[in-house]
Length: 390
Image (cartoon, one colour):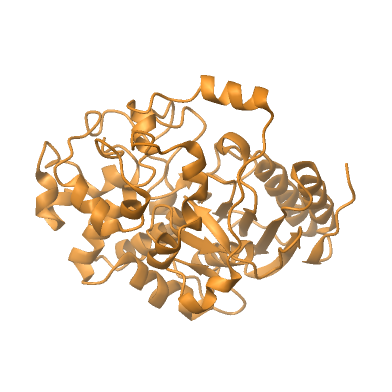
């Protein structure tokens, strides 16, 4: 394993996190690089990066870690009492009622129990970039399973549906709310819609690396493009492959429009700071979310075998429930992973807010290093005494 030069800072007591991060980057691909950042109770304790071309301010594609940013917008609207998640989507967006979708609630969509995981025939990359286009395609789409009966991940469509609800309730888009209420006030380096003047900071996601044997095993276990999982990952679109999933944020239109399901761009510091701002505040600033709102959005709704992703994940209201994936976290930990290996979460119990990005896509959508890094951070936070029960 080659020696890796790690840049950035850690607070006293977090040296083990630097060592773990260096090991992770060396094992993966020392040149491609990654970023890791964390806050504990509003104090930045880790801000690290490594790899050729990667700096602390490098921006890259977040894939479904974007859902965490969009989910915080929904959380604020719930907190404002502006949105009732138990009303049907069609109450806010009447056209959605077509094709057997009249009883699907906003909650069903947020916890992936709506049955609307994609569209017959799939989407082009150009269509996926624009949530309004995706939403229009979904108007006539029948659910792929009985709404409310089971859960199956809506990879690219969840926040196209929720975006129409938000627009109906407020007159503004998810992206506008995120910019005005979350990103700009805290100066966060995470974007749902990357400004053109910042595009030079974007480093493209690189394809994953795998041996021929690994690729053969992946292909043998890949879903039927026309099955529920294949539809969710848009593999039913002509010529669309797993490599296209990984490369999506490299599309300039998708970055510019910042669709909430997979179009976000950011740094690890930006992701960690976003979750810190939401749950603990940063510095002397109050958190964006109340304890009541955090309890509401972090309660587990869907768990057990997911028709798309298997049994690796559970869902809270608009987020992944992280305590089942990372059992050392508190019961109300919430956040979201991304297909290339990024991750972000908040653990209200310990006060930990976490952000991780990687330049090269993780093979088979699986980045197990997040568990190692999150565990090292949690150990350090507990040892230093910064993490105390909320």
